[in-house]
Length: 293
Image (tube, rainbow, N blue to C red):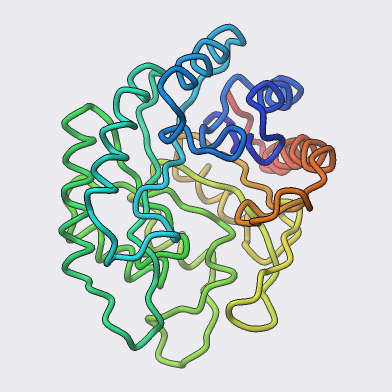
């Protein structure tokens, strides 16, 4: 097991992200964005400079946090947008030696409306195949997308999309209603979700928060182990089962990645909280006698 993190929560410039990673004595970061732009969206010469910067710092990238099929894209969107993202991501991942890309299953439609499930499955089959042909693993995250409706929805993706693997985010179930539950309005249970899908998980994101007052309200994010995502239970179970992949922090405690007005963000607070979050995760791992490589 090794540690990484979405370092764009520590700072927008890549230099700042590298600084936070090194302060934690980590050698990996999860690539998502620099200066607010995703790694597969920046100009080619800019990306080349970023890759050289990471090489010079001795920082490896185990995960590409892509925008592919994410919560910001409806299933009715032009699939050509997704295909172009794939075409840009693959050579960049090869340049960085990155073998795993985080994808999603397109934005959730309001419950009760047509979710266009077959179109989601069709697109994900093509996405997974294109990455597999390039030697890259596409892993679906249980975020605000179709697969995030419930563990059963995620497992349906596994059934319908050959070769699909999973990224499990501990915090995402806490602020989502379980759309497979018999009783309407029931929140998801993070540990139960984990138990249902864990055989297919190749990467773990650590986020923790408390159940929101009502659906659609941003939850209160907490330090790892202090919310209702059952982080310690999930980590202990992963350890017991011999999980040997990466564990990535995605704190959200100082700022929410989805915030639109970046002028309202205290980036020094973000940097400090990112480093603190990493150290608190290390503390949880020591409590269960699970030390990273």
